[in-house]
Structure formats: C-alpha cells, structure tokens
Image (cartoon, rainbow, N blue to C red):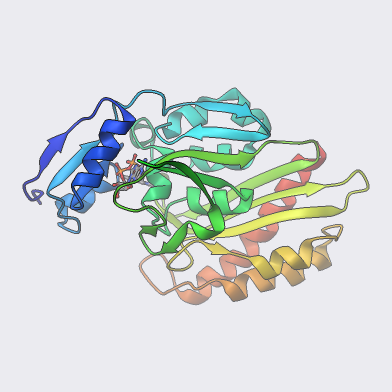
Length: 288
Ligand SMILES: Cc1cc2nc3c(=O)[nH]c(=O)nc-3n(C[C@H](O)[C@H](O)[C@H](O)COP(=O)(O)OP(=O)(O)OC[C@H]3O[C@@H](n4cnc5c(N)ncnc54)[C@H](O)[C@@H]3O)c2cc1C
C-alpha cells in the first residue's frame, strides 16, 4: 500500500531534532525505517511529519566506558555484528544481532529503533532485559536513564515521550566469569522469532552462578522477564536438576498464543528446550 501523505524533515543536530519533536506532537521519529515504513504502508501509523534522525552526528558508536558498554542509538545491526569488542566480550548481543533479519536490513536498522519500537517480536528487548541494561532517553531538559525493566510499558509502547529520543544503550561491562547466549527458533533465516531466549550469567571461581538474567522474545505482548527462574538459578551450580526446575518456571511465565508460527503448547515446549540449551551455552562461555 502507499503510505498516507506526510511532511519530512532531516535535522542536523540533536537540539534541533528535539525542538521539532516538542513542537509537533503528531510527528514520528524515523531512524532506519525498517519498522516504521512498513507501518506507514499498512497505515498503522499516520504521522503528519517524519523527523529523520539518520543524519544526527555522534549517535553511532560502540565503546566501553565507566563500567558500561555504551552503544549509540543510531548504531546499525551490522556494526554490532562486525564489532570485535562485542564478539569477544558480549556474545549474547553478538548472537542476537547476527540473527536479526538479513544483511540488507541489518545495514540500516538501528539498535535504538529496535528498542524504541518495543515490538515483542524484536530480539533486542529480551537481550537487554537479560543484560540488565539501562536506556538513556534525551529531551530538551537533558538526558535521563531508565532501567530496562521500566522501559517496555506495553506492546509497541516504550517509556519515551513524543518530545524525547532514545540516545544510548548501556550494558554492564564484561567481567571474568560472564557468559551469555541467545537462541532463537525461526521458520526461516531472517524471520522474527517463533520463540527466543536471552541468557546472561556470571559464575564464581567454584562454578556457582551468582547472577543470571533470563528473558523471552515473542512469547507475550511485551518481552518476558523470567524473574522466578532467575531467582531459582541464583546460587546454584546450574546442574541438570536446577535447570529442569527453572525452565519449567520460565515456561510457566511465558504467554504464547496460537498463530501461524505454532500452537501455544508447541511454543511453551520450545521455551523449556531452548532455555536449557541457552543456559548451558552461556555457562560454557562463562567458564572459557
Ligand atoms: C524483513 C524484515 C525482517 C526483520 N526481522 C527482524 C528480526 O528478526 N528481529 C528483529 O529484532 N527485528 C527485525 N526486523 C525489524 C528491524 O530490525 C527494525 O527495523 C529495527 O529493529 C527498527 O530499527 P529502525 O532503525 O529501522 O527503526 P524505525 O523503523 O526507523 O523506527 C521504529 C520505531 O522506533 C521509533 N524510533 C526509532 N529510533 C528512535 C529513537 N532513537 N528514539 C525514539 N524513537 C525512535 C520510530 O519513531 C518508530 O516508531 C525486521 C525488519 C524487516 C523489514
């Protein structure tokens, strides 16, 4: 379908973009456009103005600083995929970026857009929940930091007002004993997840898991944070018995629905299988 008519503007600076957004409550932010343009074409979004932030300088970077891995909102998926820093120290993120869509989409789609879209089928929301990330949102008054647990207010509803921009994602910096893994079952390469699971954990020298983050993709109306399973695994040695108990808790908290990707029962059984596999893969990486 052809999108409805809209005005288009491409600001050059962050303050200019924020002023435009503040003055135009019906405007929509355009980043890579790989979620927004389809929504315009289906007329699920009908903004009067598109504010294209793609030319804003200084919002595309990947760096470790002050105990965080900091990622600029306009960083594209292919930059994550090509980053040796991310490959070597943040395998959960690297696993996920490699499985998002296809190379053409990954060259344009931004990490900030993936999170700001707050689509439960997108892969970064669960990844960032598992990491315990923080999201930096900037308005005319300056930046503020939002814990990822407070960021997904509802389906397609992030904690960003119309006059604000997501500007940075912060992931706790890697430390020895950290390991992560993302496993996604998809119908074909490049598809959204039938079910996905993100695991990030830390093990002590004696092999005890003292911290774990666990979250699910496309198994509810928002990404699912598996808090009970995380609590059950914390302080354990991640034995088969520990895992069996915890993955049952993860499957319980999932809210899958029957659709063309599978039945509710099938998806819940996938949660048990892929969560077990992802925890085992993360553990191997943590001990490596
Ligand atoms: C064929 C195809 C397959 C795909 N497969 C996957 C997949 O497997 N997994 C997956 O996770 N994603 C997938 N996607 C989605 C793709 O990754 C998204 O386009 C991307 O995640 C959104 O980023 P974007 O830069 O394109 O955002 P846009 O489409 O430009 O924006 C998306 C939304 O976020 C808002 N927004 C964007 N940036 C900001 C910001 N900095 N601050 C505030 N609001 C902002 C926009 O206003 C809009 O509402 C797929 C897309 C396509 C077209």
